[in-house]
Image (tube, rainbow, N blue to C red; front, side, top):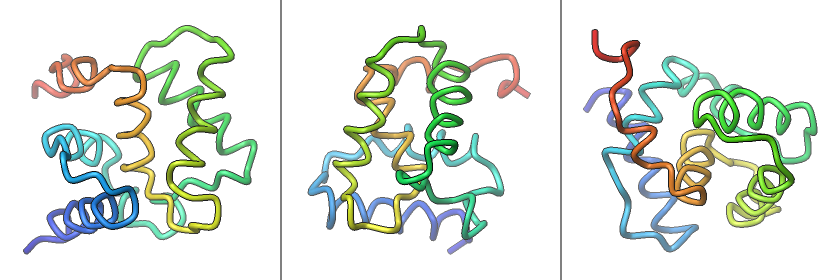
Amino acid sequence: MSKFEEAIQSYKTFMADKLKDNDINEALLIQIAQELGTSIYDADASLVACSDKAELGRVKQYFLLGRLGLTESPALDEAIKTVCKTMGTSNRKKFRTVFYYLLVQQFNAVSTVLTPTPANLY
């Protein structure tokens, strides 16, 4: 099993065990992990720190506004708070891939992530 496959399996296990989600859209999970690239292997970059306002600002700026193309609104901050709570306030391992996956689900943006863009056609 490759490192990438191991990472995907650990995300699926986390989602099943901690989030009680057994209906995982594996294609979406894999696409998000691929877009995050090698950062999924870095101990710090692979996690989201909900206690770090700057980090949450980057999630909003680069993922919600940038990647998903959402419009600035208070709903974005609320969604981030909801995902933080969903993943567990005492849980120190908030995998970025799973965090983004939950945000995509919350905004019903699966087609946005799974639709090929010119950058990932090559």
